[in-house]
Length: 197
Length: 197
DNA sequence: ACCTGAACACCGTTCAAGT
DNA sequence: ACCTGAACACCGTTCAAGT
Image (cartoon, rainbow over the protein chains, first blue to last red):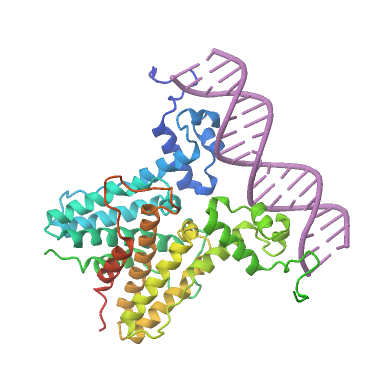
């Protein structure tokens, strides 16, 4: 075991906003948003809860803002997509996956907290369509249709699927929905009306 | 002033789930979800907070379930609509209005609580499209596209618009979005791909 | 500069007691 | 049957104090 000079006497890295945010996210993902408390977060970081306020002066509100930013900001990148429509499609699939992974954060995304969180994501969707020759008005509408659909569909999925085995939501005697297929088909339908000028 | 035999000695109607739910909703609409506490709810009902547990044995969880049911359940009705497409459109407009009126409840709608809350609404959307000759598979997808879009768009609107004068969200120097127009255009685009067999 | 410990005002909820 | 009052375990947060 090599000495780590960046590790202090208590054998733990110093507190930082990133470490705090990561620990908070892992509590939310593992136990749910309701179990995220400053005291529990302190325990996870091996620190007294009050130490967190030194890095986040606005307290829990600010912590939740960081969680929203961490989950909501996923810019669309052209990547190796074959055209703007495929790029939108890929973005939507990736964004949905992220929302479902961090579904405990979803309630925070439909709140007024951290209003700027979605702007860079929306802007990159717009840029993608502009580059593909989609008229500005159509692109603005399409960006909100797409982002709205992905957000809302994730909400429907969270409601309709158990988080852990044992939750068992769903009407008994009714076939469970194949949400992956449903999302894919819905995405095609929602994007069908978007066309270049 | 006529004597009201249904009013008891303390000059207030007896507690009931409906009265409790209404009072809770008016707190959420007026002050936000975070200010809904059992003690405040008791004050609004002129009762000790603990009296509420007699009507809602599962406590606050059950109260929130009722709020979700109250906001989420709005069946689509043919009404005087000119065909199923118009009926879907009217439903979406009405549902959006309700979500924005009770925007404090929105975080609860993207949670696993009260999983059955959206099923009757979804079922009536399906029935509407079936009656219009839309193939079953298309209708199922379309129902979730529509409901997902309305939910997600409401979330975007809540993020992007101040709840009360003084909140002032939005990037300064940028023209504010006309959300009514944006929703109408998005709705048309999202429903464009839905066609009868 | 960074963290701790005690304290304060508030929660949701339980339980025995009142009527 | 319906409501109250006191109590308990927990919150978020402030503040003075430690290093």
